[in-house]
Each structure stands twice: as C-alpha cells, then as structure tokens.
Image 1 (cartoon, rainbow, N blue to C red):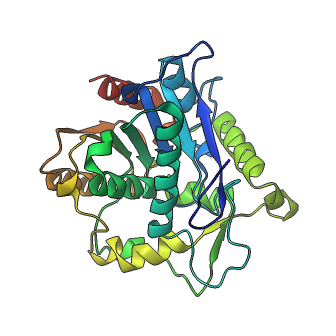
Image 2: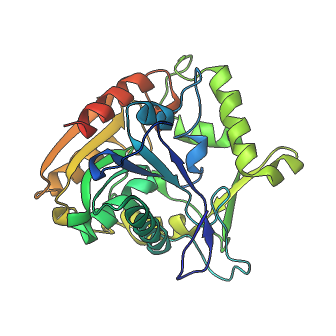
Length: 300
C-alpha cells in the first residue's frame, strides 16, 4: 500500500519479479492500470493454468507492478462521498504518485505503462503530459472518442455502480458468438473468486453484488462518449502498441485505429488484433497471442 499525499487515501500497489532479481532498470519496469469496474488483480494477475499475465511478464525478467485506483479493490475510497469520485483526473493523480514511488524506489527515470479499457485513457494522459518519462505504452481494449448511443450509462446521481458477475460478463463479452468456447467455466469460477477476494463484503449479498465508483461514467458522458478527447495523443512520444479483441464490442477496432492515427509523434506504433477475443482478452483462451505481442513489443 502507498499513500496519495494529495488525497491522503491509501492505494493498493502490488509488485512481482523473479526472486533472484537484484538490479532493476527502466526498460524492464512495467506498471499496469485496470479498467472501469474491476481491480487489477482480478484480470491482470488472475492465474489461469497457474499463470497470470503479471506472472508471465515477471518470469521473463520484468519488474511488474499493478495499481488499484481509489475505490477499487483494496484501495481506499473517501470516507464521506458527496460527489462522483475516482474520476479520470483523480485516477491520474493516483498514477502520478505511484510512478513517483516506483522511480524513487528503483532509482529510474522512465517506465513502461500498460492499461486496459479506461486504464488506457489514464496512462495515455500521463504519457501525453510526461512524454519523456514513458518508454512504451501498451493499450488493451482502448476506448476512444465516439458519440455512439450504445455506450451511454445512466448515473442517476449514484456515486457507486453495482453489478453481478453475470451482468459484467454479458456486457464485456457481448461480442462473443453464441456457443463460443473462449472463456471456460474454470476461468469464470477463478475470476469470480478473485472479485470476491477483492471485495469480501460482496459475498454477504444475495445475489453476490460488486460495486465500483461512477467517476469514470461521469467522465465518459462529459468527454469521450460526447466526442471530446481527454488528452492529446499527438503529445505522446513513446512507442505504442494497441491490442484489440476481434470480438470486442466495448472498444471497437475503429476507435483503436482512430487513436493510433492521432499519435503522430509516437516513436513507433502498431495495432494488433487478438483473434476470437472480446474485451476480456487477458483471461480468455487466446491470451497467449496477446502475451506474445506484448512481450515482443516490450523487447523491441
């Protein structure tokens, strides 16, 4: 746990690396940021066949970190909530203090950033604001500006959104054809257990209901779902990889291409499609393809 000195909230931060790793470098340091609803450990560090995405990168010699934004998983939320919180501005503040912590601890001045869904906007904004501090950006399931009504979410003045595991799967895997076998029952069970572990109080309800802050939904209505970019992609100087699931209906391939086209000053950039995969590509059957693309990119 670390503390954001601005908000005074404690944030969940996890680190993984090889046990015998003694020296650390910027090129081998990776920080991951989660999406709109689920904490990092439920996706990025979910072991499938005994190996998570975080485990895989650590086994390849990377110093792997992942963060939970305030209000997600075991990161603290404000004790008194009077407005939408965990907005992208606040998430960016949490990311800044985390990177500052890693820089000081590891004695480095640059870092590689990975993000999923909303996390791609958070890390993209950081890279645009601090272009000399980011070597590589990995954006998975990256939403971008659109005015499509099918993305609308109703806030109704609520500071938390509640959802069941089934509702979340229906939303994030909506593009998977009927009968597709890219998400096993064993994976679903492991995923649900990880969610409950991150929010033990959810298990006290029937049906089991999880919750996440609505700050991101407030921003979605204000910015990207209203055709307004949160940051300027042209300010990014890092190398960029965008990965999009072929069946992803939450972050469409045309959004990824539009975003990539606007990164006019990136040192290098590429877009990779992950076959037979949805927005949940990190824990689906073809995740090895994603792992391969990401590892090759980080080593480039």
